[in-house]
Length: 371
Length: 262
Image (cartoon, rainbow over all chains, first blue to last red; front, side, top):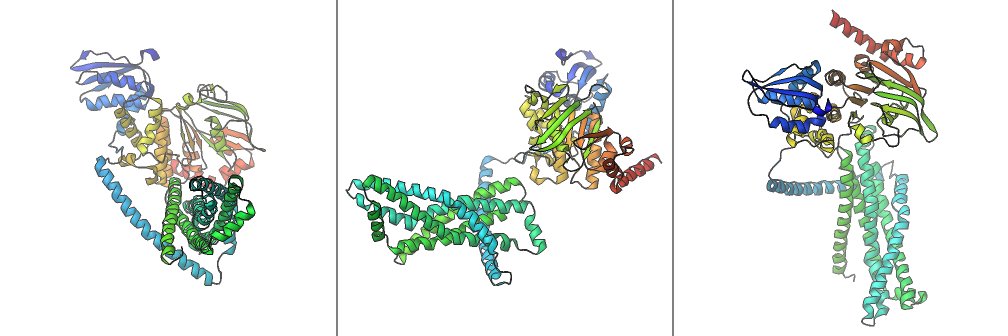
């Protein structure tokens, strides 16, 4: 019967056209059937279903639509299951919203900008509040009987510091090589290749060692913090903590902030040293500066102030990265999708904040005479 | 009753050293609602995943609509148009509205005009008992019970002949669960569905299942009506159906039947 899927035949019968449907009235044939039915001239129909071998809800819907749209139409010779399905889809024919309200594009764009501005302002306010909460809880915890959770702090230091040694070291080593190589090529034009050492020493200790480490840590740890805390929040673990009388900020956030604050200067120092080693290796092979001379030159040209400026910035970077990650983790709501978007936001915001802070420090240290 | 819709023979499933199924046989007959019960970890969901081709069994033969789904050349995608699956948590696509979720299978498999697809989505949404405004909502905006109904609407999108339900009433309140049971029963009758139903809900088992398969000891221990199973002399089955909760559910059913009869 499949081949004569849906024969439509017209014939006048008592003011109503006769429409004969036969074969299979199923979803697979719905597209062709709908086209044919659209070609039936207007007016009431007498629909003959006696030749239908199989019918599903889509077939029944197409018949129901004809009956609904052409008043005075009726069905003849319908098998029992066709009658049942027709009644079923007729009962289900209710108004239904299918799409969220669509606004004109220009209005939607303006709306988006407004939402983004309000969102940014709200995030800023909530973020400042979060920083305050963390500091308050940290101080309160430090003086309380329970004290800071040092076991958690050391575990976080291992995860964010010790486990990052490989990738941070490799990155810094390569950056050192790149600075040395680029510096040597450019300075050669002035016959000032010797100053490559100054370039390496000063840029790594003062800026790049710390900054690039902070960006790497933001990518590794801010995302990890946001995902960990966000997943715990979805899993209602944070609520469970509160009911047991634990403060999630004290248990989860404070140890992470302390760990990153402590570990950032150490990681930054390690990164600077590896960058200097990488640069030295290139000076040795490309510029024939032997290691002993290189180290001696570094000690001569890099003032201690460069080192201290770098080390002074690092704890702030660490704290900002940790707080951003934890804050975004706390903002997770609803679905698993939210964990993903919050993790992305955590990385972008912490890198952005680190660079803003770095610019602030650059101006600040120059203003107070640290050149 | 005709040839079985699903026929499983000698199914073996292993995860590492752990054997979940060892020589499992099961038949699902056309037009019936078959309940599948078993303790946690007895492999109910694994059985379902094997039948719908998401889990490749270590050995055995599984036929659905007479097609061997374990055969290497099996056109599983084509076959999957003929069944609908309701996953435990709904598994609605979170980036799409309910109406779009329902339309996904149609959009992929058929070339229907957009207007007709909208109408189909609308009546499917109404059929599973969702209010009209639910169609435009995203899954995150729905309650648990509504999400289950929306997922059922998607499972029914292609008018399948076979429906797989993985714990459809888990997490629903008793009123919602009873309504869902009735919905499945109505849909089975109106659309002529065959239903493979995994559940822990004794009320569901007693109310809507024609037969119940008990999975224990890595195989199907017994298949039959509830009355037949309760007469079975096996400690696990006795505990399951004649434990305090089983008796309560059976008592409630008897009371309900009595009230209706009187």
